[in-house]
Length: 257
Image: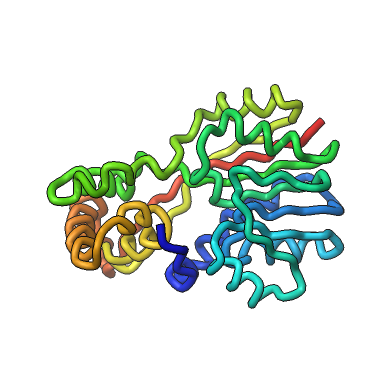
């Protein structure tokens, strides 16, 4: 899959940063010495961490060279490292592992989250936010269009790029067994967007990537036209032309005992 498009992603920088701020607000740490921003992207979440913990050694990790380039440009005083997040392990136990909107791309949360929690220093926190929207029309319709001709064969593996989340009971059990005290909650954000094309632009840099990457430019245009038409039937338009996009997210803060 092609590298992330930072410009497309940052079209909605404020909306994408808000969940990171809400997650950070529930982290019960005063002065962590070592902080890792797992899947730091262009550095919007890293900036929040730096502002709250100005004396911490903060490292941002991402697998995208384009995202890391943008993060280094905007936060030159911080450390950013390219890493495979599925196999990453710290050299020194961190006090906080912060993972905002990244773990949905990694499989086997039953093993992954306890593994990450096991890296923490005693009393440290694993703070996680993941989109919980695979059953929303925006994402159901991605899959439905991908199952239609002429896309079916080319996009047969696209739906599997995102991990199906566990239940809240699953995450509580996995992390409690790993020796953590667990705080879980869900929030549904309502994003007002400019028409149905606004929904397309929102998901184009994230959820749509696995569906667009295998297609040539002509196929992408055809897929997007059909997808946008399906969105019109699923999301009513407000009188002023806006469309309201509900976006549920799952939050987890697990503190190692």
